[in-house]
Amino acid sequence: MDMDMNFRRKLPIPKEVKEEFPLSEERARDKEKRDEEIAAILRGEENKLLLVIGPCSADNEPAVLDYMVRLKKVQDRVADKILMIPRVYTNKPRTTGLGYKGMLHQPDINKPEDMLAGILAIRKMHMHVIEETGFTCAEEMLYPENHRYLSDLLSYVAIGARSVEDQHHRLVASGLGIPVGMKNPTSGDFSVMMNSIVAAQHGHDFQYRGWEVSTKGNPYAHVILRGYVDRFGMNHANYHYEELRRVADLYEEHEELKYPSIIVDCNHNNSGKKYLEQIRIAKDVMHSCHVNTDIRGLVKGLMIESYLEDGAQSIDGGVYGKSITDPCLGWDKTEKLIMELADLVE
Image 1: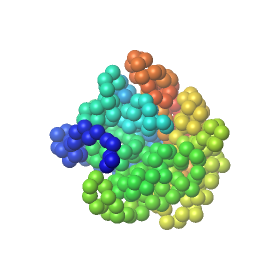
Image 2 (image 1 turned 180 degrees about the horizontal axis):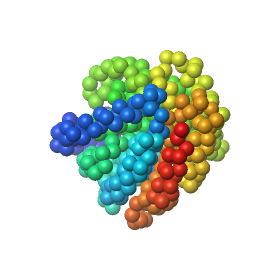
Image 3 (image 1 turned 90 degrees about the horizontal axis):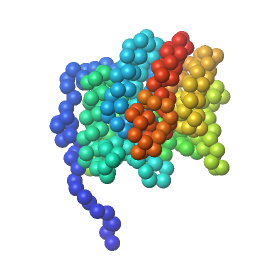
Image 4 (image 1 turned 60 degrees about the horizontal axis):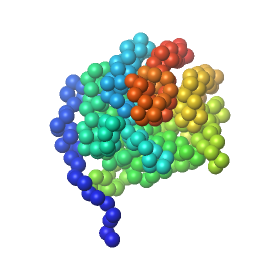
């Protein structure tokens, strides 16, 4: 047997989708400006705190746009202290491969999976966020070959804990023109994370979307700490002062790496998926920054899962603005936390 796959239909290439749904020149200029603002923070030239914030998964465009419009109003209030990169995550990794896989797969949760409709839906949603708010957003690069459908819209990419060991993710990250955060793997092994950053910051030759390509390396590849699970299934945090110092030491061992940076993911295994703990964890990280100037220079931002309503629901729960994947902070708590974090930025 050759392959046991049903080739249903050929999907449009990214160039075709971009031509059908183009980004305006004005918004493209806005994206360039935001990209440079983010890069300046990672280079240590700006003292603002990056805040990668938003729903665990962007599952519903009206609710996502509602959230983003609210977030933009808060961004304007804290613009001198915080630069927000909203999470519009449309690919959802699944530990077993089962369940809801994000809007890319299933743009309408009441209908079967439809990848063509999903590709169009996620591009249009990202464009609508830009048009409504001026925000250019963050995505998880779960599928490297799909990045080009959104590459002209995004300002930040995260490589997830399950993907960070994959060579294809590392090589593609080396050719992205925007910052890439590399999460520690689910095992918590920092050497795996650091190896992925070394790979992403160097140039490579490889195959991508049917092309032989070469890259120069991405100097803005950096660490995301998200906690981990041990062999007994127990959650362990890695946002504490001692862990931040450990990453600082690892960066010193890799003198070739440019712009050493850490983003702390306040949810996932750092919180044991107890979403309310994100509030305490974010403040704990800021305290570590206050007591050690080296850590303050290294920790460039936080990642927070937040939506309109507290918690999570089943996929058919029907509550507007409530996560159907991991539980998130609701809007009132989110707004309060952002204002408190702004007060803590030195």
